[in-house]
Image (cartoon, rainbow, N blue to C red; front, top):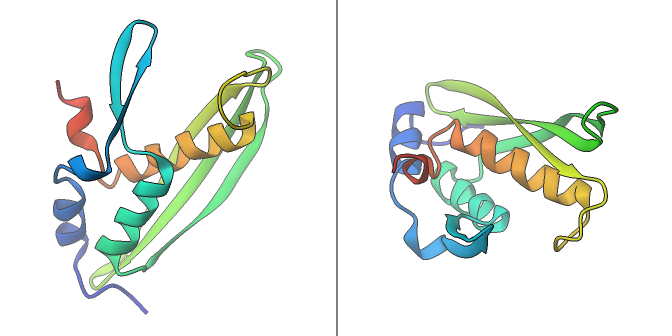
Length: 126
């Protein structure tokens, strides 16, 4: 089963501003605005009528960088076809950030894959 919208309609809707779902935080002296992973999932569920899925493509520690890296694949099921994109995420294994390094890397990878469908793309255009 697929969404009642076309790929183009989904991407157009995802590219709009989602100011109600945005959060801000200070990072290295700068204020950054972002969409948390749970809000991104909620937006994706709304726009695609729940017709999407994702999987972890690859995950593990990079011996060179010392970071935990993850690749996530997201598939959208639109009325005119299926579209697939991947995103990457990484986190230092010794992070003292909120959450563990695996969940931080997964959150980053998922949001980056969503961005390739245009979700939050406006945040990169400053």
